[in-house]
Length: 163
Image (cartoon, rainbow, N blue to C red; front, side, top):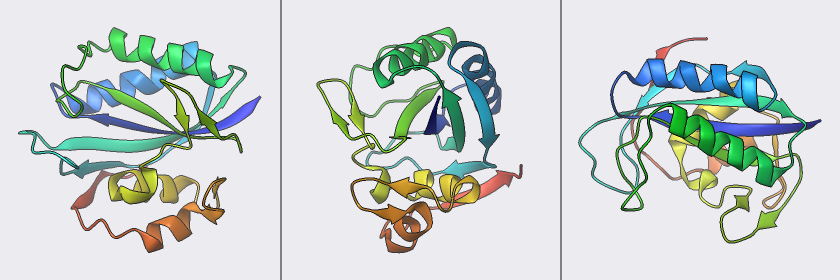
């Protein structure tokens, strides 16, 4: 079994419904969801989309290897009515990113672990620090709390539903 840190986001439709549905489907298709963070409302990052996101983090224990986990997460996004993106940053019902997978470092065409931009994104780090402050980033060799303290992103991240 592997411990995986995930980020979930939604900015289309019933955002809370899609986050909760995604968590439920992960428990059915990918492993055991050990803990989830509060839900945060966040501004779009790196783009100008019309709708704010709801974001959260989760810790998943999974028997799946990284590639198979990615397949299952894409399946979950599809079940949650996510449409294929025509541009890099687009509105979506559900987006699930693998942030950290144990201490693995992977860089293939469609899979980069740890997530290459997680340390720059307050909307990723704040929910993750809530549930895994001592989680370890294998590239930067820092905890999640340290990454959050070092993060220069000043975008608005507001807790709306406390876990």
